[in-house]
Length: 257
Image (cartoon, rainbow, N blue to C red; front, side):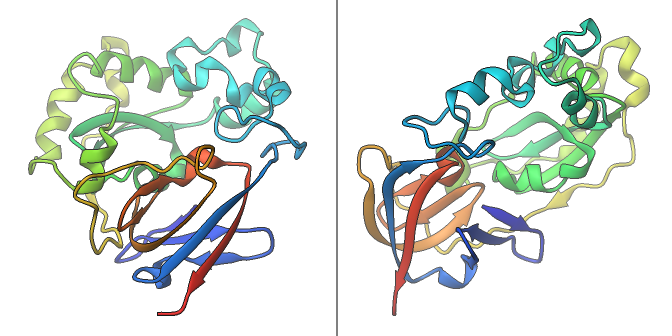
């Protein structure tokens, strides 16, 4: 889903030839159907199975963006000359990155390129975010993240995130603690004057018992949309992680009130 930061986070669903304003459909009954077709988000070829959020297998094993070092940036091997796509690595990994704290289901540490704030926070369903370091390349952000993750989570409990079940915390206090954990050679990259950013999502209600819908098992459903948070559409009887289905061909419709 395409996101935009406003007083309330705005969401659009990109379809073949248009973008659907999802915020305007909250409260409406949605019909979503997977046609059974899956197309690689990179090369466009049809594939029976999607890998790494929308790639066909040949792209999955050949693209740098699908390499393990994307998930574990501290394992970056660009300097060794073994990057799958050196030009892509130069453009995306050898660029300034932020290390941040986000309040999702708790306080978590994460990294992202300098241009992806606050989009990264929105994708994770964070209600607060704070930049704590800026480094000149991705591998350094990974080294900081690993050092901090010994005391801070780097994963989100998605059910608690959707329900908003998280205690009130002071991210500035957590920043001070996190920066003490930076490797000594990387403390110079600490950001001391970052401001806490708050995000509000268009959520009317969340199911008492959250069940994640699987389009592979049940390709079609009809349900009333009650909210959007992170990359989840929230319905009366289910939620669905739309990012999981990158490359899936779906038919989307809504019924009159």
